[in-house]
Image (cartoon, rainbow, N blue to C red; front, side, top):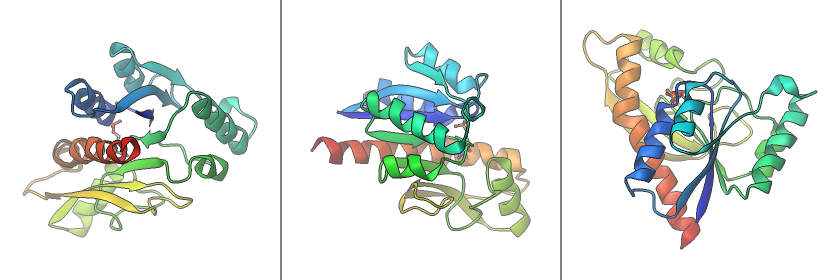
Length: 198
Ligand code: GRF
């Protein structure tokens, strides 16, 4: 069984895609142990609660340092036997001690075809604004392993989405979520679970 924790900061539509896939039987061998947010008002926490999943708010400002925050997160997840950490719109930069504690066991969803439009400052709508400003004809989403850099870890899956005439950052974000993010994130979790459980 692959025990996962999903870390969120916002609306949680990627979390919802994981929950929906699980409840539809598409993620056999996966348990969603908990959902963690750095924001107590993240709607993603409500989504978790509505599906009977432990929803926990763990805020960086409650800790004396980033390292203390990272150490607590690592301890919390290790004690729950979490095998895989899934960053689904988690906007806090995780400290090196956490990355090391879960080396090779953290994945992230990014709303572009890495290495385009990624790295520091590229998150949320900003990614789509940059893609439209550059005039690319194709964008998409990437699931990758998290390493010490920002959006620099090994790529697991990518899915392309075509820019359409009249796209705004908002319409593009919605299509990338629907057509790419919500497809490849559950797919990556299933692939990792199949390998873990084999
Ligand atoms: C998504 O666009 C994801 O690619 C990015 O942050 C956003 C999170 O959206 N990392 P949601 O909270 O999953 O709806």
